Amino acid sequence: MLEFLPKVIPAIQAASDVPLSFDNPNIEYHKVALQHFDRSKSRGKPLFNSLAASRQQLPEMIELIRVHDMRCIVMASECFRPDGSTGQSLDPQQSYETVKRFADMLVTQAGRTLDDIIVDPGLAPVGADTYGLVNIGLDTLRLCSADPQLKGLHYSVGLSNFAWGTPKAVKPLLERAYLTIASRYGLDFALANVEANATPLEETHELVAQLEAALQEGRAVDGESVEEAGFRQAAKVMEICSAYVEE
Image (cartoon, rainbow, N blue to C red; front, side, top):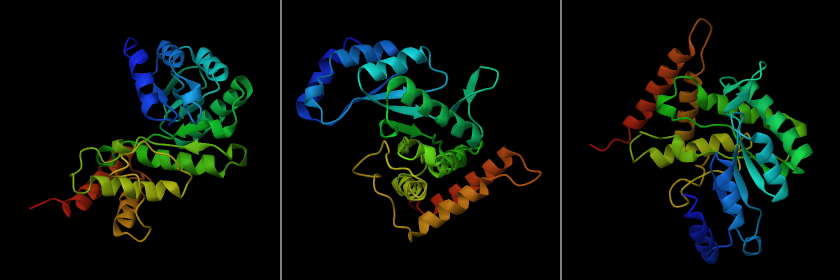
């Protein structure tokens, strides 16, 4: 992989001036990538993808972002725990606190503005989400967007995760319906296929209301486990998909 970077980065920059995103959890990857990235050929800052609570060499990554004047993606789906450990966030408050912590580190230690920071709240396959992860991500967006001290942050998801495993006829529509819902709470970026799923559906499209109803079913009520609600959500998603299955 590292041997390929000196070839692929100049080739991409010869074809496009779009800022490049370097996506790898290993800091050595980013160091090599940045050695071969020509800032004069880019119309924007390179993107460090990504910072997360569990990353090794986190202080070094933040310093690299400072030195190379990078934008960065912050993963909110992992959290810092009170005992000093890290793990998957299973509560939107945990994700929100993680975002605030990263924002503070990046502003104070890396000289970033909030405009330089892109938060990934996390996105799971909606039809197999038995832990309420889709709703956790949406609730994280709500909490962050409502905080005036975080105004200026950007938000992004890996959109192809959302409708994984659903019929081809409905997959892009489900992804676009998610964009419609999430954009209400601040989502402004996405890793998406510009030919298929990068445009939100109209608010009045029936699939938006159907998806909202399915996600509501995924919220556990008193006396109910998260898994029970998750299976109910999955059943609703299957019901939506059944109308798009070709005979």
